Image (cartoon, rainbow, N blue to C red; front, side, top):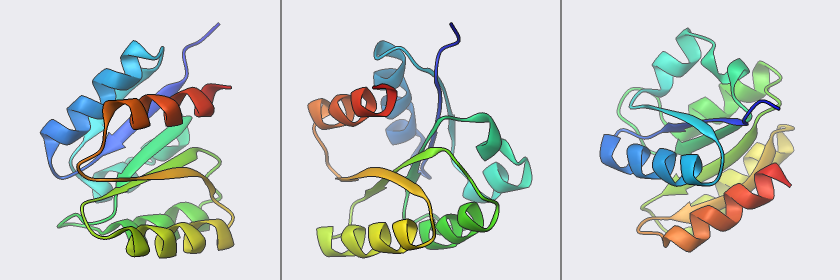
Amino acid sequence: MDKPRLIAVDDELEMAAMIAEIAEMAGFESEVSSSAKALLDAEAECRHDVIVIDLFMPDTDGFELINALANRGCTATIIMVSGYDKTLLRGAGKIAKANGLNLLGTLTKPFRLDDVEALLRKAID
């Protein structure tokens, strides 16, 4: 059986790498990207079961990425991450769901490793 595939998209590569490492411990094949634009340009979202998105990145913010994924009919499970307030994450989550995306959950930075692991377990159940 193939491992589920995850990509963590965050302009802070250390954060993306940490999420990817947790995902690998949970049984995922994972990769990182510091650019939402690169993810979209390569149409890499089509190759992943789970996409972890930081809402604020310099090249393309998470809201633009959410809209682009929805326009492409993305079927990946989405986890959104932000260092901003939870109200913003809830609003982005509502937008993602309203656009037909499969939003699994949100994480506020700094987050606990247990919270990441719990979301990833839900993604593969």
